[in-house]
Each structure stands twice: as C-alpha cells, then as structure tokens.
Length: 246
Image (cartoon, rainbow, N blue to C red):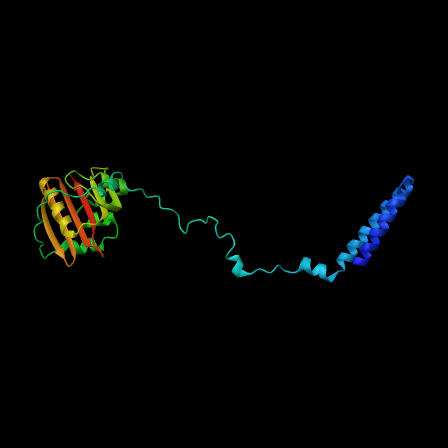
C-alpha cells in the first residue's frame, strides 16, 4: 500500500509540474487522472484487511474502568425529597429548655381499655374515632403539620416536640386535632407536664397504663383530650395527642 501511495504521489506531482502552462483540455485530463487515483486509493483501503478490521471490529470496554468514569458528576438522589415542612415555631420551641413547675400526675390505674383501641388504630383519624371522637369528624380529618399549631390553649404542644404527623377537622361543627410527635423528655415528665397544663385549663384527667403504654385523658364541658405515650428505644417518648373541642 505504501508503494502504491508513493507511486501515486510521484505521478500526481509530475502531472502538476507538467500541467503548468497547458491548455484547458490537458487540465481536464489531469483532473480525470486525479479522480482515478482517488478511486485506486479507496479500493486499496477497502481491500486492506487490517484497516477494515480496525474500522469494523466491536469496541472493547473495560467494565472496571466504566465504573470510574464521571466519578465526580452530580447524580440524582435515590428518592424524591420530602416536601414536608415542620410547623412554624416547632424548631424554636425545641431550643427552649422546659423549666415550668409541674405537679405529679396521679398513679396509673391497672385497667386500660383505651390502650388496646389505640394500638389497633392505623391512622390519626382512626385513633380519634377509637377514643370517642365524632365519627363524622374523625372520618373527615385533613392531614397537615399546620394542625400542630392549632391545638387548644389548654392542651398545648410540648416545647421540644418533633412533629411526625398532624391532622384535624374544623367543618360541620368539628374542632378535632390529632398530633403524633416525639420528645426527648422521659415519659413521667410528659405525664406530669400535661397533667398540670390540662388541670389548670379545667380538665379532669385520669391516668391509665398497660405494660409500657400509658394514657392520660380528661374531659371538661364540651371538650376532651387524650395522650397515648410509649417509651422510645434509647430514650425519649412517642406521643399521640388528641384534642376535641375546647
């Protein structure tokens, strides 16, 4: 192939030199020769096994190197970002130490009929229904963490509460709030704090327990509240809080 290329190059150079000052018909003949040489070169490339093999063989890929490619590129997250926004004021409240004076909650009674009903509830609406809330109100709750900011004054959110879920209903005569939250405080501290707050607001509270699960609930005219408390592994307490009316 190299010999053919050198020969074609020599002929082309010779023809170019010879073409200087030639007539137009000679220049046309020179162009035809150039085309013929191009076709010869193309045919030679087509018949060259090494060249054709390089062009048509499958590209070899090393899987180990592929895994290293674009190692610094920005990749999408494994799952969509949550759109949930903590209720306004929750973060500020969590930073404030709880120094309120509290009175001890009464000892728990051994009969806790509400404990089993609370364990069977799969949603906040079902929890409210299982604890005596109006069936119509419990069935029509709307879910939003904003409901945690709309609790009655006598049943407030604990200062360091971290809200997991909240729901409520305000239509058709309903005034229902249900909030699920966690607290770093031990269970007894929460029992005493809520007993003090609700008693000061006029509720008559009772304390029941079954195993590690405790319930503090009470009523006053036209209103009721209920807390279901369970200890968390590693410390702290899980709380489901319901307030109806008030």
